[in-house]
Length: 227
Ligand code: BJW
Ligand code: ZN
Image (cartoon, rainbow, N blue to C red; front, side):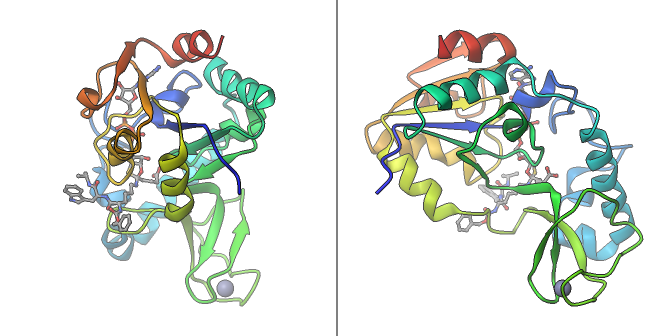
């Protein structure tokens, strides 16, 4: 069995310095649309084109951004401790992988993946979805972004909770702690005896659950923690 020692939970703040906008730092998420309009199944049912355009724009933007020092430091740590580190990211970008991380769980899905609601197949996807292209598997025009919206169950929860329970150290990087179940992992880790560390620009909503909080930009804090 794989006994992970360190679990690092990352959120939008780790990609902010790469130029990927966060969710709750700016007013309004995208062209004045609320998160409920663009990140819920109900939003997709009522305004499918708007939601596809939102994810198409983010997918296109992703091509032009690069991993920053924080992603690179985590990949370097994995190289030193290949069996001991798991990165659980809430981000749907691929910046951890592009920095070289391999043990990554995308609990809220991936921008470069499309999911067919008709046949359940997932397809690597780097183009647009707004014109409702057919599924390469079954031909149905049921492709949606392969991401986890409010009210849906995040991916690989069993693996994540097992790793959090085993970990000696739980580190949270660049997340506001406003969205569950990710926001509850720190309490889980504490319950199982892990040390908990937060690296964030501002104190998160769950700050009290961390043994230590270091405040500042991820591109500075993560490399200095890893050293
Ligand atoms: C920097 C920085 C720099 C900036 N350096 N730091 C009432 C109570 C409790 C729960 C609920 C409730 N009502 C409903 C719920 C459940 C709901 C929920 O949590 N709602 C809350 C709003 C209360 N959750 C769900 O519905 C989830 N599913 C669920 O619960 O299913 C039930 C179930 C679970 C498990 C087992 C069995 C059943 C699903 C949540 C899905 C979230 N989806 C999104 C969209 C994904 C696709 C996409 O990307 O578009 O995920 S919403 C959005 O929020 C996205 C993010 O991953 C997520 C978290 O955001 P994140 O990463 O924290 O970003 P920000 O912007 O909030 O914060 C950035 C932070 O970085 C800030 O702190 C800055 O200070 C910092 N920062 N620059 C370091 N340079
Ligand atoms: Zn299909």
